[in-house]
Length: 261
Image (tube, rainbow, N blue to C red; front, top):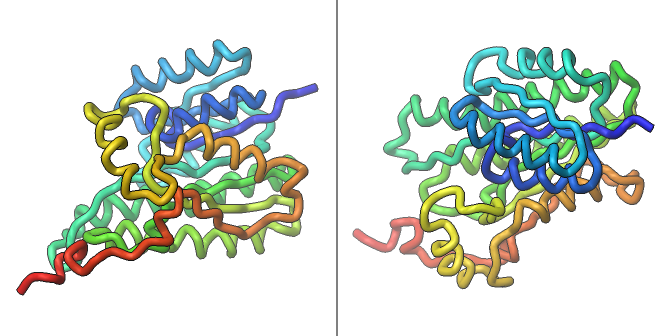
């Protein structure tokens, strides 16, 4: 029996890397995408995936560029004949005060976090429809869509757009049996120290989270696998907030820089 295929954008490193490794453990062949900024890490991730006994193909595309989603899926079509799970994970985390926001920073966030996500989901839906596969699409948003963290007006607004977009995509893809759901995580542990001091920072920040822990990338993959399983056959258009309860909290006024004259 042909193995199912999971395609994850931004899976050469970071959260996507941890998700790809875990989905491989669930038995999926993996389509791994990276932007080209760290090809060595991407190839290392691919090697670890292949050690789990599944197929892994690597695709490079900078989603910041125009028409990137179509080029990426053209690459995918050249290697795979099926797509069972698509995870739109790519994103850039850039902040700044509204009054100080530049168009350059805004475009950096917008083109990858929103525009590329929209058209990658479009392409995934087209492929599944063409192949008559009642697949599962999972969009990775953020708990920023709920919590008004300081200095994140552009980033958070686009993460909220993904939550709304999930509903539209779920509705329009439903005639083809394609389900679309969203996961909105908080602070993530990608399974390795992506940046120096990340684990030490986690020890400090986790104390501010109700469940006193970061979200593991592997957990997001487990949720993705559930959402793509027969057990979730009637679940579509939903957003699952996975942040250890951070969205339950409120912050004092100083957090937003409003407590000073």
